[in-house]
Image (cartoon, rainbow, N blue to C red):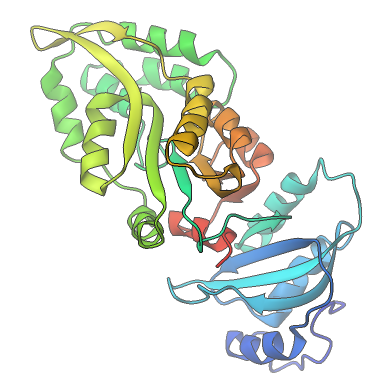
Length: 327
């Protein structure tokens, strides 16, 4: 393998993560660069890092490497490789990075600019399969004996195969007559995504505002807002009569456009520049709010979302989002 950044590696060092510091320190330089490639994972060696760079050499030329300021602080190796692009045609860069990520079991992101932790910022998150590890509507349906029927529609909506409003209306209609007690049972045992609490705590320390914008339901989003100490939450309200779901949603449906509008409105409310906004989610209905933000982060997302987002967390915990921010 041709070494692009580490020409002096010997055989003993190729598989030693402990040697990475020596090479990063000696190879770090201040040459001009236009993009930063972030590589994060476990036991990144010079040999493996160079393997990553060789896989993307047609689109990216490295000029130097440095440790991210959170390298090993949260249990991960985090390397920033500075460089320049070789091609203006970058339509396939995210699928390429996805292939490399899978091959090396690292999360990889290429960015021209990044929000900074040194200034207040805004993170707007999807809820289901992002903040929590379930789709709440599917769990309600399971308790009502409609699990497979509703889950199939949910999956199609998250892949962008059917319109979100139509899918939500159809799925909620299936829940007519479900006792509110079922929702309470789910709410009391919501599984939080690994890394989300570390992510939120760190951002709070740096004066960031935190919000949920969800196509799910207030019954769960409002609970998470209080539990996680968030600043704002918006989601859909399930209509209830005599402690039973009516099968309808009250008010405006929180869809992709409403999520994007929420990012803009919250940024204006808290006087946060667009350059300091981040949107994070896993489904197709999160793509519009990602486009509204300076940084769109796919979190163990559907293939379309991984392809369209600015960066994708495919391997690591959600605190990995911090690695795509400047100090």
